[in-house]
Length: 135
Image (cartoon, rainbow, N blue to C red; front, side, top):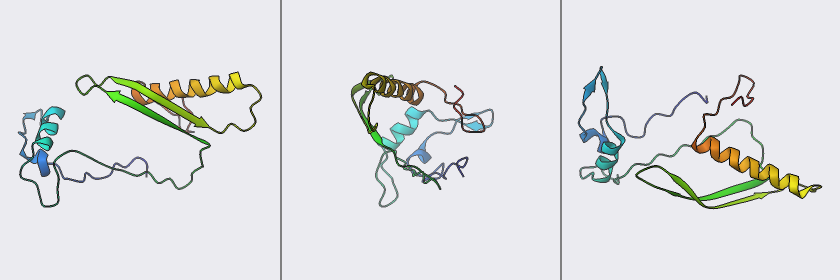
């Protein structure tokens, strides 16, 4: 089900984050991302076969899918302090079939790139019950 979130690989309170202080605020435990990252990076007492660091992998396997007719690759630089993203290079390869109006195709691809970057980095993406994009 797409509404389910997979269980964490390391339960809360175990692994590198388990050594962090647990300040109580309104009944909720809060720890900053900086504290978690520092604890993961400086972890000394880890379970066997565990390396310091933070990482997670999740694979989405839809029941039905289509094959894309193109691919896009972005090379980005991310400022670790500010979170600012700078694109160093962006390559789009799309099979459009027989192109009648090249300028129109270029505009569609460029517009799709800009919309995708906006959705990925800056915008809230909202769909209605039928899957139609409404933002």
